[in-house]
Image (cartoon, rainbow, N blue to C red):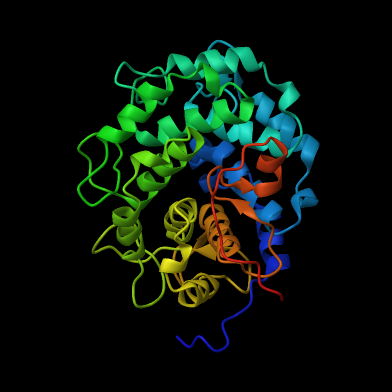
Length: 329
């Protein structure tokens, strides 16, 4: 794969791809992915916003749909209307409503109560009332409380203490205590510690090297040793490196080329790797990675909250992350 003439990011085509999602609601895939609906809306909205076209998606319809996912009994949001409240869906709902300037539609005290009710004695969070625990859910809780302005209600010491116990010999973090290091879990733990102002918990150089070693000869990044490259790790790995101010430790040109090579230049969207089926998840995280790499024509992305930086900066929440300078087109 030559690095001389990689295909440019086809923003109009990818915008049209995201706009088309959900049009065929009779499709089996649409119903099989109902458990990810709010997450997918967040992925699509963030992608078009980073590509500078947030208004390409209908604001009022989106806000109304998010509110239709409200679980009145629990005080949180489910993934789709009628689904039980879950911390992941609730976090996505808060991110969507923040970007759409509609956070006033939320019963904030009830959401805060729901989130805090999910913290376990160990400091980790469950996803919902059924009790599954994961450092992902801890991050969702920290992010949501931060964006809502209620981080002060969280037991920060207990929360940071759980992350500390998840740290492995290689400097990375897993899904829970004793689990192997994984780039996505490294992100959620690193970002949570950034929000909590506890980055001193991290062994910066050891983790930085572990993250840098995720780059394969083809240019793409993997999530852990001996695995294939995947476009989504262009965000999971780069975000952590950006928070640690070590983005220059990877070959940005080769990674940029890899992400661009995974585009579908006929129908739009980005896949996990070249030639595979595209989806909105990889489209967002491919675009997010390119933003952190300074790709021209994109909006700045805050790697801690995975939202356009302007929304986080407006709330005074920016931390000391660093991305590559934005290049000219």
